Length: 86
Image 1 (cartoon, rainbow, N blue to C red):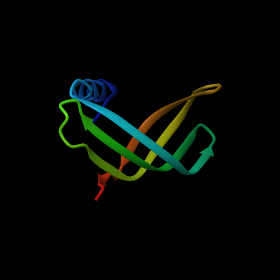
Image 2: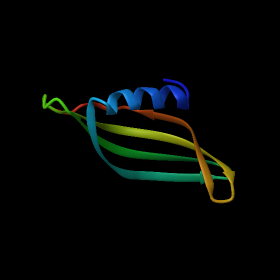
Image 3: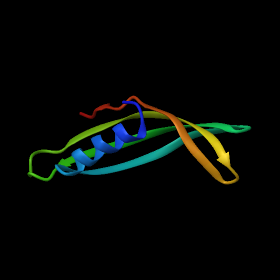
Image 4: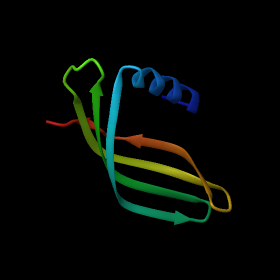
């Protein structure tokens, strides 16, 4: 998926049908000048509003950020390796 608009449309459609619960644990953050990355472990539960069984995913995420102004960081790339949790 590319772009904020595509992500927003997809998320809004999902939230009409499901509730999302998530938690994350940051493993590492590195800052170098105006660039930074964050590696985390993420757990996500997707719970259908219909009452159908929930699904769960977990895995690593990697976010790359760029400093836009003093105190302001923008995520410029975000990748995850979430897979179904058994």
